[in-house]
Structure formats: structure tokens, C-alpha cells
Image (cartoon, rainbow, N blue to C red; front, side):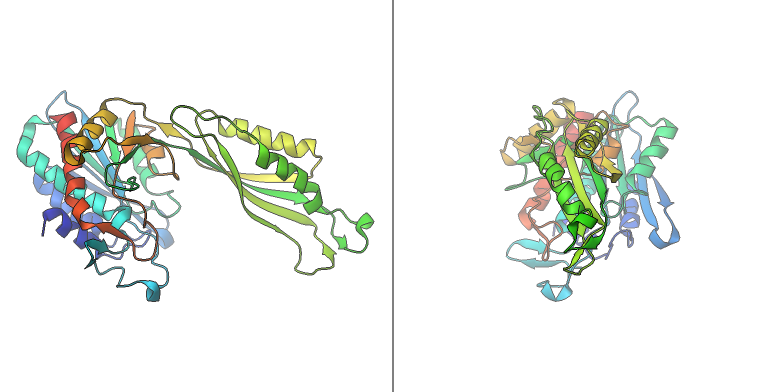
Length: 381
């Protein structure tokens, strides 16, 4: 069994459902300390949702740059255990695949990072640049006491980070076909439209918020919010939930509640999107209120040293030329981009993340480690 596979299985055997780290970070720190890493555990959050974070850094040769790996040890809940083909916290091999919760998202990546660092340090010693790891147990949860807290701490300390690789599962069809060099922003709103409740047979005595809001919602759904750009698709607006009524069929409801979300490019801002929504609602004469939640700003790393180094590493290991992409949901890269000028995400195939019988191809595990090691060699040697 390879060192990367062995560490992957050891991490997968720990039931680290968010925000529980279940000892994963202690295992990682035990591997890093003998290499000269200073390992610091930072706990955050209330007792009912205690988050464990690991900051580990090895200072390299003076004047050389620092590359940080980032990831999360927490996993999403398993879902119905009876639907799994094997225990989700007992790593199991079937048909060349490794099954367990967190196999793709993202314990395989973390194991590959650690072993890549071990191999790189063993070969390069003190002649290389600096290496760090930032690991949290609050990525799959609310993400309020994890990476964002460590980023604040590092900013206060004046820590300079030149490059960051986030181990999110980015590959689509085969390992190495996609690198994420940015992510769209996420802006959610809970819209409440007020009406007047009344008997459905006497509509003149009531005011139906469903009827009032429908034209405005149709207009919002038809907008071209922006055209996107070279790196980002156009901004999208989608309703996720809509509710009105008491459950009775003879009552006009008194209010309508709509949940919606923007996934937005760097061509729009939260302020511009909010303003356009309010303008439409006001123009339609709606009595409304919106509670806004900014899930994350968009971030982008243009083509540069980091993306070039990783692209070269992928080509050397797999023969593929990866696509740079900003599609998908948000990630902790949105926080790290505030203190690091070059952030990319790269990891295994994402087809089974969060699903029943989550898995990775065993044959891809060591190549993933090699890509991380080659990227270190390209940037820090």
C-alpha cells in the first residue's frame, strides 16, 4: 500500500462530520512536526459547534516564497446508512475505487498534500521555499469559525502567503482536466411581499401578494444581469423556495416569501445586484422587505506563476492540459484570496461528492500526490 493511500484510509476512518475533526488534524500534525513544521491548533465557535483549525508552517530558505496548501477535514453527514453499500467510515475497496464519506471531498487531497510535502522536503531539505498548511473542520458547515478565522489571524500577524492550493475536488472526467482559478460570488435574499389576507370569494376585500409579485418575479427571472467575461459565466438569478398561504384553499394569503440566490461574476457587485432587485420591486409597487446574505465575493487568479506551475505538473504527470474554470459553488478560496494573490483549487474527480457511496479511483491517488509535489518543485526549488 502506498503512503498516500495509507494516510487517506486513516483519515477516512475518522467520522469527522462537521464540525467534528475527530482527530484528523492531530494525525496530520504528527506527520508534519518531524519535517520541521510548527503546528498550531486554533479552536473557535460556541461549545455547541466547536471548530478545530490547524495552522502548520515550515520556514524555508531566506528570500524564497511561501506556498500554502488549504483544505478541510470535516465531511457532510452520510445520509441514510442503509443506502450505502458499505460503512461510510470504513474505507472499502471495490472495483478499483475507494469508498467512504470524504473520499473525494476532500481527505484524499489532504493525504496527497501531506505525502507530497514529505517527499519534497526529503529531497530538497533547507534549500527550498516555505510551506504551510491551513486545515479547518468548518467548511461543510456555516464556515464562520474555520478558514475565515485563520485568515483574520494570519492577517493580524502580517503573514505573507505567495501561493495557495486548495484541495477541492475539481476534476470532472479525469484527474487533471480542470483547475479552478476562481469562483463566483454568492448573494442570497429572502424576499417578503406583504398583502392583505381575506376570503377567496371576496378578492376586492383582500390583496393577493402572489398575484402582485408574479410580474416582478418574471421580470427578475428574465434579466441579463451581466454578460460575464473571459473567466466567468454570466451572473445568474434563481428562486429556490416560494411560500404563501395558510394551507386552506379558501383563503387569500397575507404575505409571500421567496428565497433566491445570485451566483455572480466580477462584472457585478453585491450593491449593484441589490439595487436592481429593489428597483424592480419598487416599480411594481410592492410592499416588500429583503433580508440579504452575502455568502462570498467572487475571486479570480489570472494566469500566472501558480496556474502555470500546476498546469506543467499536470501535463508531466498525466499528459493532460487542464482547463481553467470558475464554475461551481463557493469554497474557502474566497477567504484566502483576501491575503494571498494567487489561489487555485485542484483535486480528484467530483462526481460523487456529498452522495451515497462517495468514492475516488485508487489509481488516481498517487498521481494526485505527484502533481502536488511537482507543483512544489516548480515553485519553491
